[in-house]
Image 1 (cartoon, rainbow, N blue to C red):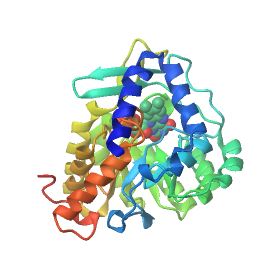
Image 2 (image 1 turned 180 degrees about the horizontal axis):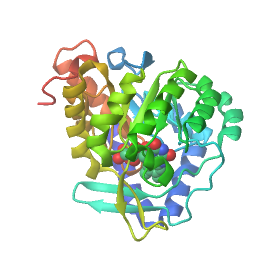
Image 3 (image 1 turned 90 degrees about the horizontal axis):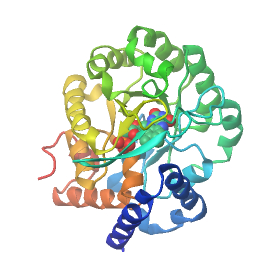
Image 4 (image 1 turned 45 degrees about the horizontal axis):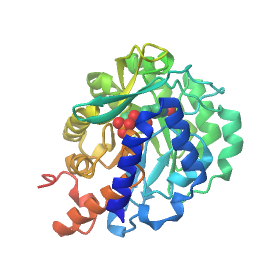
Length: 346
Ligand SMILES: Cc1cc2nc3c(=O)[nH]c(=O)nc-3n(C[C@H](O)[C@H](O)[C@H](O)COP(=O)(O)O)c2cc1C
C-alpha cells in the first residue's frame, strides 16, 4: 500500500504537476490538501514509542518536522495527520504581506534530484488575523510558530501574541527573499538584544533558524549568542540564496537535494563543536529515508523538510519513519535517540 502510494504520487508529480505552470501546480496541490481528508488515513502515519523525541522539553511523536511554508490552518491541520512529529507555520510578520509578485516559484532539476527556487516574500495574513485564527487549530502534534520582523520589538510583539498558541516558537532570521530578514544573519551583533528580548518574552522553547549562506558566522557568532541568551535549539536551515532570472526578484532561495551535503556536514560540525549544549534541527534537502537516517546518526535531534513533501509527496514521512524503525530494530536500540552520534546507516 505504501509502495503503491509512493509510485502513484511519483507518477502524478512527474506526469501532471511538473507539466503545469508552477502557480497552477501549487494551487492544485493546496486544493487537494484542503479538500481531501488524507489525514484520516492511518496509511500516512507510523506510531511507535521508540520514535518519540523531545525538543526543547516538548515531546514529539517522531523527529520529522514539516518545515515552514503553509499558513492556512486547514492545511496545517491535515499535515498534523500526515506522519509529522511537529508542524511549522509559515513565517508570520507584524503586518499582512502579499508576498512578491509572480513568478515567485520555479522548479529546478539538478543531478541530485528535483528542487525549487522561491521568492515567496512571506505571503501571510499578518499578526492580528493570525492571532484570532490560531486558537482554533487543534494540536494533534506540536505546533511550531515561525515569526520574523525588522526589529527586536517586532519579534517580541509577534512572540508575545502568538507563543501562547504554539508549543515552540521559531525565529526566522535567515529567509533569503526579504532583505530586512536576511540582514539579521549579516549583522550578528544586533542579534544579542533580539535573543534576549525574545527569551524574556516567553517561556516556550525558542528555535533560531539560520541560513546555509552564513555557515562561518552561524558557528562563530550567531549560535554562541543564542546559547548565551538561553536559546538552545538551532534549525539549520533555510533556503540558499541563488540568482534566478525566471523569478520576479531575479533571485530566490534554493531548496531541495542540492542542499543536502551541506546540511549533513553542518550537523556533524555543529555537534562536534557544541556537543550536548545544542538541540539541532537538520533542514535542507531531506527527501529520502536514508538522508533522514544520515542526519540523525550525525547528531541531529530532529529533521525538517518542505521540498520533499512536494516532490516526493505526503507518503515520504511514512517511508522515513518505517526506515527509522527498521534501523532501531536492526541495532537493538530501545529509542531513536540512541542512534545519535552512531556511525550511521550501514
Ligand atoms: C515556497 C517556499 C516557501 C518557504 N517559506 C518559508 C518561510 O516562510 N519561512 C521559513 O523559515 N522558511 C521558508 N521556506 C524554507 C523551508 O522552510 C526550508 O527551510 C527550506 O526550503 C529547506 O528545506 P527543504 O530543502 O526541505 O525544502 C520556504 C521554502 C519554500 C520552497
